[in-house]
Picture 1 (cartoon, each protein chain N blue to C red):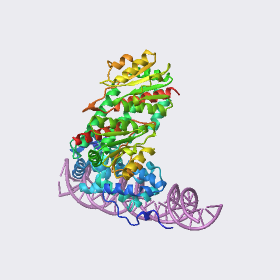
Picture 2: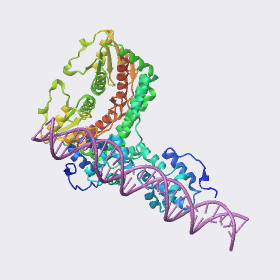
Picture 3: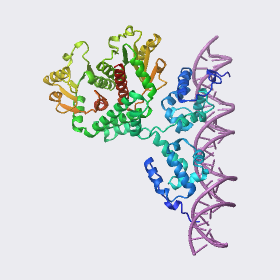
Length: 278
Length: 278
DNA sequence: ATGGAAATGGAATATTTATTCCAAAAATCG
DNA sequence: CGATTTTTGGAATAAATATTCCATTTCCAT
């Protein structure tokens, strides 16, 4: 037997830092056969577990036998798993088990402005999610689900910053085999002829409310279709045209909102509707 | 021989959290004899090494024989060192919830309720955000920002579930007056002629990776443009074509991901680039 | 299809690491 | 100061863990 695998580099010196480790990993990645690639994938997305796991645990996680993982370590240039683990144990600085500390660290730390910004958005997102959990109007949600579950086609509209939410909602509907149409305003076509009796509309807009979305909701309502509103407050102009109103208060940071809560609401809605339909 | 040491509390239950551990430690501290106090002192100021050290290493650090350290663990209420270490290993990276099981429960039990679904998505989002804060590669983020700040036009591409992220990214770039183009695949036009020297690409894709996005990234790279990858792991096929790789691990619930962390990363990136450009 | 090379899984083994136990050393108390 | 209890260190053992090896399977080129 020749030795093609370690021939990737016969006596490659072991990586001496986590960065070197990452480099090596991406170098060898392409030439790895199935099992070893599984190792690589799992290790790459769970690098932080290496320091505190056993071969058996990691192997189980990657769904390979322990011997495959050993081989993997050796291909990377280590003498075995223990040597690899040593690298990560030395580099280990506790990942700030405490989220608050870590956040503070990011804000003030050496990562500079981008990291601090990220920390702010993470925090905003988390707060938004918490507030959503607390202030959820279950009845309204249930009603919205019932409405959409009973509809023929679901029309989804949201522009500008609501557009990502609308797009994701449409995506999830699609995956759940719910007939849905995303009104995206491309070419200024408004597709309102597409609204048929028996259909329903999900309209998404936040202050300052987009005219186009309000107009579609209003049109739908006047034609007798059900309209589910996803908006920022009960007094939103959108609420006027809606049969069910879902409100989500996002915590903004700077001029931009995290959308976390809005998206959570949207997926939950879509999945609930999808399963209600069977 | 009576048993005064464990008599500190004959069958005290083991601490179940790092906080409980700290409490216990300070409780017993005063009643400890010399060697055991050495253990306590050393452990108290090196709590973070427990997860990644052996008995022998810690004992050496505290300058006591291993058996003293064992006794110390038992006085704290653990059956031995391993049990104590387990606490710290788990606290460091708390096992993610078993969503397969939860989802099953939801479907079967009374929990098919939309509100319960929403709670799960909220939880998934929160975990994703926390994990992003913990695992952020600050250097990669800084590099990505620098890359994009130096570019002429920024091209953004992401399809399917990555599309909402791409759309939001493009929206924020626009608001921050960064020349950006969203490649949305409308009409199967691929717009690759639009890539000009001096431009940069932000490519977003997660397993299973979309061919179109990979192909745009690869094309851009081969023409010498910078490519920033926003993906789920370092071993992603997208990483190959990238000059900077940002990874975000989202906790999935069922088939759908919350996108919270991915979006947080995207906004932070866009805002940082926007302000770097002035 | 067929032979040869490569990759794989798992059982066997080696090594490391945790844990117990007890004889010796300190400490405590009358 | 001697008797008794507590604490200590380290050697012996048990358990967990890493590592190797090889028979079997898979892959690939012809």
